[in-house]
Length: 377
Image 1 (spheres, one colour):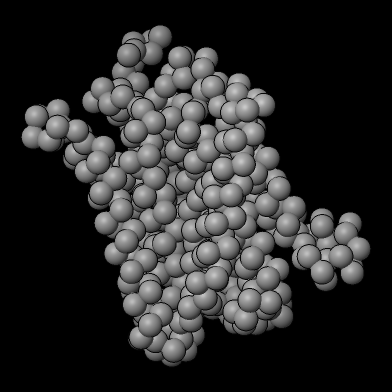
Image 2 (image 1 turned 180 degrees about the vertical axis):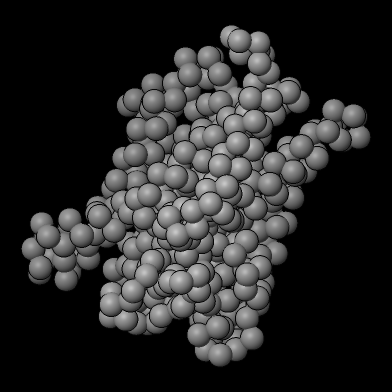
């Protein structure tokens, strides 16, 4: 594949990637306060620093970083203040980087002649769970840090499993596993590569979740509330089953492009929605004893608007996070409907890559929220 001006697309992608990194690095060196402190640190590294130390915020001033553990102190702090979680700037930036990386993967898959199929999509499913589980490892790390105990992973190494760096780690691990097994398949060393790829992801996520449960059983700092996982997984399965039945019976055109992959997407985003509702509104009722807050921009806005519009007595009875569940389900169904046969006929690789990204951005945070509440951290 060649661009209109004859430039190879892979070379163009690599050149753009290197140029972007060089531009940011050069700007950070030339204008450290404006580019590094005011942009890179404030929106990307600062939130990671605060998150890794379990701080309310991190403050950058005069080339040094201070972590604060009180909201009032953060409000009165002088310098660049960064809090754990996402902002509009970071969210948009991550979306742009995600699309750019997807284009790079698409070019690589075309170069290797990897066919994207529903079977490969399912094989990549465990990797989406792994990302969320690894974030919970960092949450346990913070729990130990706050209690003055030895952490599982020291800082700054732990930054590798905090957003946004965990996206690059998972991207490299998943792509590496895919290329490894596919090359073995192409050389005739394995008959098919999808089961081995799925096994790699399943082994990684099983080891991670198993390690978390072991810590729960051996440490008083980590609890265990399996009801959270049971409610989340059974609820998501019920919603996905109802979606599949209703769409197949009354609106089969919704699934004509995605097939059973569409039900998987609805399931994944419902996990995210239910996990948010359970952790934000029902943690006390389930006896978890931990107060959770929204870190995502859309979730936070939904809760804030619901609090404003919904009567106080109703908010007290059913909570304020429930509209987010409806938004997640509606958005997932809409995406499934949009991805019709024509999209897959035009570019099946790009269509599947987008669907992988769409499921991952829902299932990853959903897995994390579910496991956090299950472990009461």
